[in-house]
Image (cartoon, rainbow, N blue to C red; front, side, top):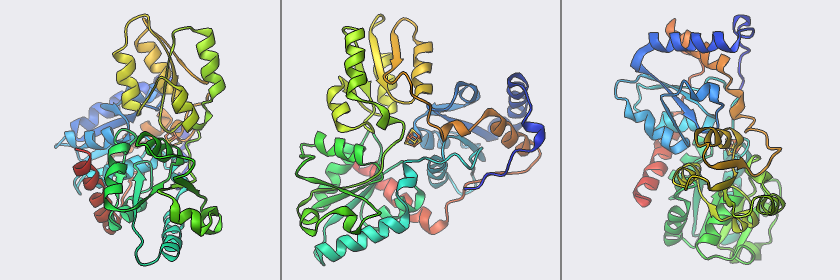
Length: 365
Ligand code: SF4
């Protein structure tokens, strides 16, 4: 989405001016405006957040404030959409920088997914029994597609439960947009990535597969990935183990299968945080996830050795677009009664996306 350039008066402010003006605007807005900060946001944003969490936790946290009429979501576009779907109609959801998308979510769009569905129907015929499952890191209209077609949303925490449920509803799962979470989840459930999974490349006829391969696959995995989590490698794990004997390797399931298999632990962002928090003082952790979160954990728990598995890793570049100056601009506009950057999910999409999200809550309760 197009983000209008910030007015010049917001582009030359010092970090301290921005911080104090955010505090002042927040105080004027009071409890009707709630700021949510995703774990991957920079510290200068997190310090202003009323809640911090992963995307699903934050969408739920948005509902913890019955008095709130405005949610400022410091995260990326699909997260603000989920908050709009899950909050009452009168609540406005704002994304401080509209350019903050998610490169993984952008790897599957509704036109590509509909085309894939049609091609699967052509190959599998009237008896087609495919259940679509979308990772919560996807556009609202993909959640709507899933809701309309008997499928569910999943998070990185509940993916095994959601996918296991899907396989009780149909013979195959179409999992998008992250092939790695899909593959890791299928492997965790006991399916063979080599013989029971195919990858669907939306830029190739039949996703780059033969009809026979599609017929025999249990999992059809969309060819998408997270540009941050794909950076972690076996070499980095070997180096961490060599340099820090006894170290624990902890990675996110958006990493490649071989990395997840070589790690000691894997799980969602919330799982990563809880695991490190519960660890003994003096323990050592090489963590394969976004750098802002890893650095924050290291700062908050100095009695443990915590570092990012990839020493060169850059932050999630799209999350990073939520600079504090955008937050300030958003809040000061609200103080003046102006709503900028509101994210509105159309009613029809919202209806089916809510069905998919509610299904996830029921199935994964
Ligand atoms: S870390 Fe990966 S999945 Fe998360 S917002 Fe960034 S690109 Fe998307």
